[in-house]
Image (cartoon, rainbow, N blue to C red; front, side, top):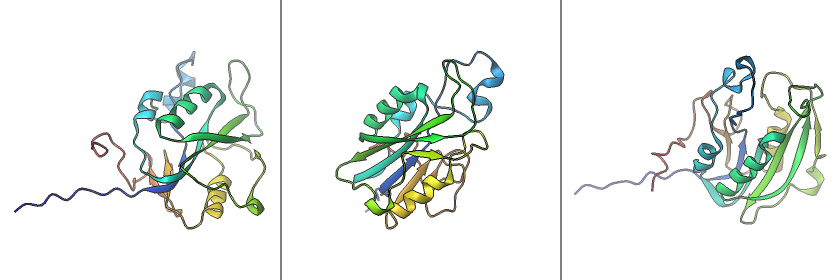
Length: 185
């Protein structure tokens, strides 16, 4: 008799994501995001099947031009928008209406997931000078660890590993497989 074992995927309490948003408004090839890393369309990002527990929290980065798409992703992943913080990069960047100096860290929950303990809550304005293209403040990931120390955490679109998180991305050895084939049920 042959037994088929169904692969059980680990489920996460905390998701931290910095999607590789595809932009379509760059007027010159030298300014395209794809020069830095491969991007995904909003539909491709929405199609990812995120292995979360019934009660989970999502911390997801977006930019002002991608705000509506970010809300679409939140809903597609089964979360409900709660609030956001602003990262003041302290250096002016590119832009078409305004020259961007900030990014948005959206917070969304699934089921019943508590906010950080009141004594650990931080300002909604995070001031930290930007460095390398798209590199986010490590401070945020560190704070999420402090807020939720005994949880299963997944960083999506990760650039580094080895920091008490499972990771998924094209710049790291991923701990999980989010390909369509692995998520087929």
